[in-house]
Amino acid sequence: MRDLILWVDYPDPQDRELPENLRFGVCREFDDGTTEDLYSADEWNLVRDFLDNYSPPAGTAPNYNTLLMLSEAAKCKTDADWGSDRQVDAENRFFKAAMQRIPDHFADTNDDWQEAIHKATSDEIIEEAMGRIVKEVVRQNPNLAALLEKKD
Image (cartoon, rainbow, N blue to C red; front, side):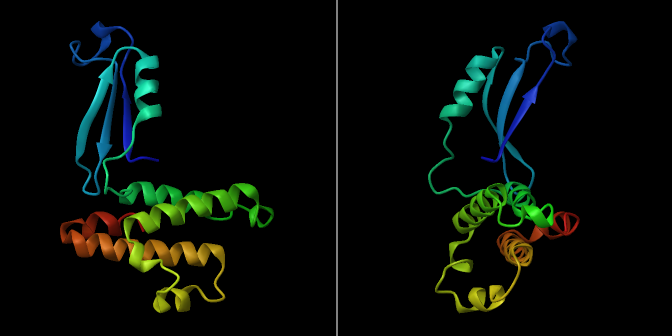
């Protein structure tokens, strides 16, 4: 959930499309789908060490795809799931990431946000948050509008 993509190729270099490439590659994904290569290796333990120690650059926030995955995980799966440890933890992860992305939208002092979530269910609050995130992402980068509309 750190906006990373892990690429895994065949163990035998001769089976790879580009035999000179290393087996594992890690890149960071941006909202527009572009990526930045971060690390590559042939040994999984080196990749795992990299991932365990990776921190996003200072001042960065989760991308749209990460927020979308977190929002889906935060929703109740069944009636029994509502308020479960799993659901509460997932909801907290989603809102922590959402606040990193656009803190002004989800502040306790934002009357518009407080009115929107007043007496709403968890799923409705998550949907409202994602709607606000989509609007902000499009405002910051209008050429993403068509891409994000397809994910609704």
